[in-house]
Amino acid sequence: MTEIWAHRGARLVAPENTLAAFAAAAEVGADGVELDVHLTADGRLTVRHDPLLTLPDGSVVPLAQLTRAEVAQADVGDAGSGVHRVPHLSEVLELLSPTSMRVNVEIKVGTKAPYRGIGEAVASAVRGARWADRVVVSSFDHVGLLEVREHAPGLELAPLYADGLARPWDYAAMLGVKAMHPFAPTLQRPGTVESFRAAGIAVRPWTVIDPAEMRAFMQAEVDAVIVDDPATAIAVRDVVAAGAKGDASREGGGLAPALI
Image (tube, rainbow, N blue to C red; front, top):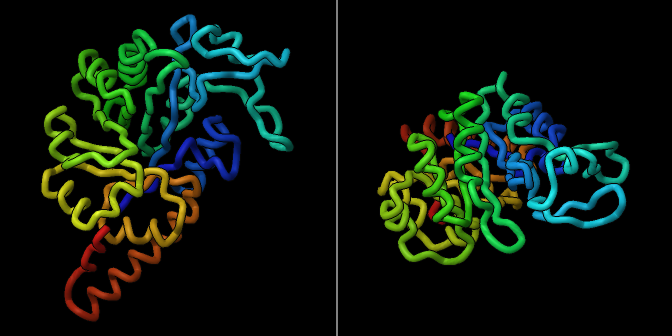
């Protein structure tokens, strides 16, 4: 069954990449969350999508130039949502530790260049929290993912890509990874999902917004969909599952995967 991973948490319910958003994703029943990490000036893994942060005095500063204490001063809440702070990766792992959820840690790139040592920092944080079997590390910086492997060979890695990549399942094999996270529209060519499956590569498209697209991906049996609205995705999955059971009872077989 296709898993539902909440993109930056349940970001339609609470400000993205905050503890409230991740708690909301858990409450609604998501199977996992996706989050983004940057490295602060003092080597702390900060959970935020953008590389810049607006401080209380109105200044906009790269996260790479701020300490964790300085980052903690910023309020990243939306109007009317109350005060929300930028969490540290360890805080998110601690929050979700009682659940069975998976965490997709996306390593971001700084304003000018990749963060030096971020792969080692992610590997250390995951090992320290004993989350190695529940974390997937992804990034557009595929070289950076190989750095993670150097420090934590057992961690699952999943390169991200947004443009058309010829035979991405072969590219995955070349890198020695068992999963890929493609931009959802790149999977529209018929047979792509089936080719991933035949190669033994897990495929988890992002960001899937339209319920009809969610349904198509679920019928094609992708491993997970990364979504902004996990509640809707779960409802769609329930409908797909019910339809599969109905087809099986009427025809004596399972639901044929849709071609995407």
